[in-house]
Image (cartoon, rainbow, N blue to C red; front, side, top):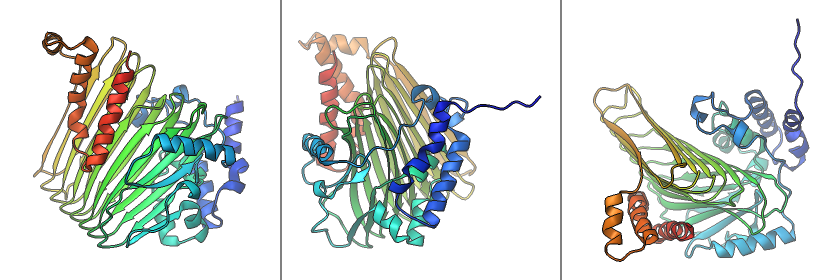
Length: 441
C-alpha cells in the first residue's frame, strides 16, 4: 500500500517562506544558491524536537510550533518606537549599532568617527559585494542544525565588524536588536566580527522589544574570528518582551595565545535558546564562558555550549548560574571535547541552579569527551533551594524575607557576573539582576 503524507497548512507556509521573502534578501548568484541549499536543509530537518539529543530539553515543535513570517521593513512609526526603546536601554560610553526588526538603522547607529583600525559595514552590503573570502566565513556555521540552516537561508541584515592587527579599541561596540512591530513576525540577522592579531576589543549585544510589541521571534547568529594574541570581551543581555522567542547561535574560532571572555544574562523572552560552538584552534589560548539565567513565570531558557580543544596548552572555564522561580525552566548543556593532540589542556565547568518554587525546573547536563592523556579536566552540577539557616540568620538581623532572599541570590549569581572585565558593563549586569529581584512578588 502506498501512503502519501499530506502537508499541513504550517508545512506549506514554511515551504513558501523563502519564495515570499526572496526579493528582500540581499545577495545574488552564489549567495542565492547557498540560501536555497540552506533552506532545503532546514526543510528536511524541520523544527528541532526532543528526540534530537542537543535539543532534548527544548522542543521547538511544542514550544514555538512554527516560524513566523519575515518582519516588514521598519517604517517611520517603527523607527520612532525603536528610538524610544533604545533610550530606555542606552549604555553610556559605547558605540551603538542598531538593528530594527532585522534591518540596520543608520539613523540610530554611530558609524562616524571610527577609531583607527576599525571597519564597520552592514551584512547587506557585504552580501551584495560578493567577497568570496568573507562569504566563506559568513556561511561557515554547520547547516546540520536546523535553526542555523534557517538563519543562513533567511538572514536579512546584520553588522560586519573588522578590526585591524594591533588595534586597541577603547570604546565598546554595542549591537542592539530591537523589535518594534505591532504584528507578530520574525527577524533573521547575522553578524561577523574579525578581531585582528594582538588586538583588544569589547562587544556588547542587547535584545530588546519596544513597548507594545507582540509575540515576535528573533533568529540571530554571530560569527567570530579572534586572531593570534588578541582578546575579545563579549557581553550578551537578553531583555526581550516576555512573549518573545529568541533563538541565537554563535561560532567562535581562536588563534594562538588568544583570549575570549564571554558573559550572558537572560531576564527576558518567553522561550530562548543560545547555542555556541567555540573552537580553540591556536596554542596557548584561553576561553572563559559565564552566564546567568533569571527566570520566572513560564519562561524557558536554554544555554548549550560546545568547547572544542584541538591543540595543546589551552585552558577553558565555564561558570553558569540559574535562578528559577514560579514555573520557569532553565537548561544548561555544556560539552567539552579534548582532541588527541590537545595535551596539557586545562578545562573546567561548573553549573549551579537555585530553585525558588516547587514547580521550578532546571536541567543541567555537563559532558567531557577526552581523547588525550595529559590533561586537567573537571565538571560539576548542582541544584537546590535557598539555605533556610542563612535566611534565618539574615531575618534575625532585621531584614525582611524578600530582602534576605535578594541578598542571597545576588551572592549566588555574583561569581559569574564578576568575570565581566569592563567595570561599567559589570555594573550594568548587577543592575539588571537587581531589577529582576525587585520585580519579584
